[in-house]
Length: 564
Image (tube, rainbow, N blue to C red; front, side, top):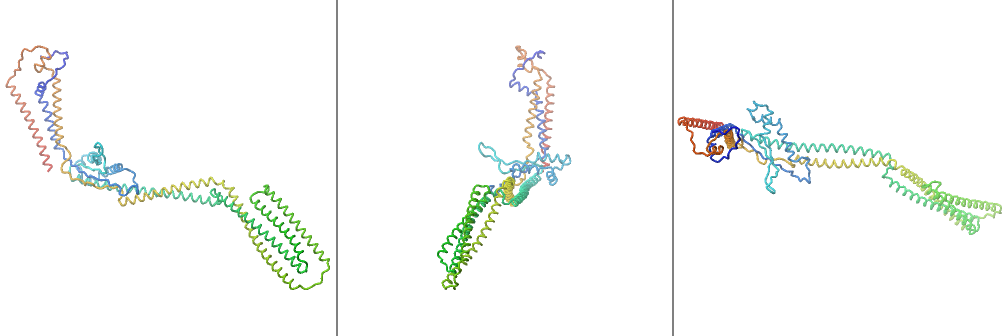
């Protein structure tokens, strides 16, 4: 009995008997996809050629020399350098060379371009992975100083050779990269240092030329110039004191000579020596004192004129004192001259005494006077020479004082330019010293790399010769294929059951008609037709199963025959 059309009635909940009936009704749709996918999985997985994976482990050996003593010239971390080396080694040219050298993929090379084959080999067949170890808190994985190179290929011997070649290329590339990096660093630092040296030499040449042109007028020589001026002024004062002292000594000696000459003349004329000597001595003392005053005032005036101008008050005062002292000296000289004239006239008008020969005592006195006069004259000549030398020294000191005074006045003119040159020189020197130190470190790092004491790569585990294949994973693929086929059959059976809206049993009749069931009449069919249908079904499934077994067995046998 079919449900009434146009009425939407929800299906009743199914129980275990209903699921068993569904499986019984759609067992062909469930078992058919399962058998088909099982056969396809077995045939496909055994027709799929084996792939062997060879693995080589390479250890990263750290720098042998402590980094506190020698710093490497390579600034990249090992992970970055590994990525750079991997890009170089896995380039198209290198992989093409490896394929041609070891005769890889002979069939594929005739069927696809070499670029596609290289890309497939690079992406799917070659694996470069860091070695990890379990450690730390919580069982976290952390990287260690090693990495592995894996390559999968149908021939295990070829796979081993390719891995060995890749490992050797990594080691050679690491050495070449570090050597090139250290050499490039050294060459760059050498070029920079030479340029800095040239800049420093140019600045020093400019500074030397400036110092030569402005020698004595440099800003840093101002203190020295001032000290030299003070020293020269002190020396000038000392020279003035010495000149004054020698002048006084000379005047005293001249006075003494005059006294001796007068004594000598009085002895020769037999005049009373006491009165005449006393009078001359007083006159000569006054004259000598006047000469000393003039000399002292003149020395003071010369010293002041070296420092100040004519309109300076001290200069005017000392010049007035000089005029007074000079006038007093001139007056004494006039008095002395008039006294000498009076004495001469008196002597001329007087009647000369009768000439008598000198007595022995007078002779001795005259000789003594003569000897003392000559001694004083010799001393005066020495004083004259000494005064001449002092005057020359005073002239030289005055010239030097004027020179240093001019330097002090002209210092600010080139101060800025000189300061700029000094700063440029200091900057250039600091740059040169810094680059020289860096060059030395780079040369030490280069020597370390040449001795292979830097960070290197070495083989930890050589390339393995695989015994069992890694691909395909046949049990997993077959199980997955069978599960997919079974799932597909269940989905098909469920879809057919959902599409079929007929009443299947008494439960459906009670649920959808809401009628009391008094009895049921089973479906009556011809026994012959029923048996025939069952035989045909069993025959078909048996044939399909046998065919599936034969096909799967044949693929397995083919795999093992071709493997040997």
